[in-house]
Length: 120
Image 1 (tube, rainbow, N blue to C red):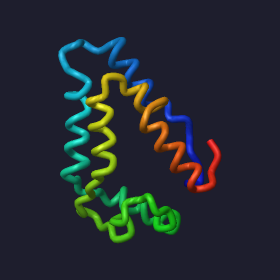
Image 2 (cartoon, rainbow, N blue to C red):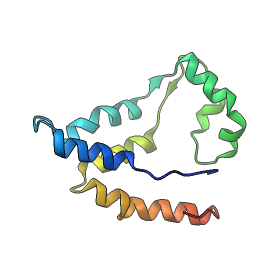
Image 3 (cartoon, rainbow, N blue to C red):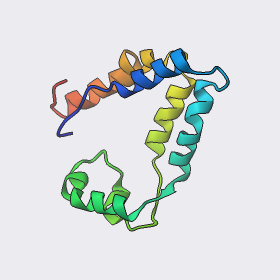
Image 4 (cartoon, rainbow, N blue to C red):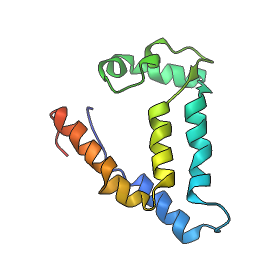
């Protein structure tokens, strides 16, 4: 990875869900539609293809990126099972903040960064 940011988005949406949620929908039910879409796949737009093409050399060089990115055309069905699994794990965790920031996912991030010679 050429860079990594502080991943505060999850904490923000979890906090908003806990503080302002109506209680009529569970955290799991909130995330499952996105996980399902990522698993099933979705057709990519011309704008998405153009954005990928503009950074294709970087995407191809990054082994963790979806290998389908180098052959994308408008309408291609893009499936992202790794991201789907990530959302499913977060959706079923008793404490997704603990899992992501201090638990198993945090450990996976640290491992990946160290093995790429990067510092956090």
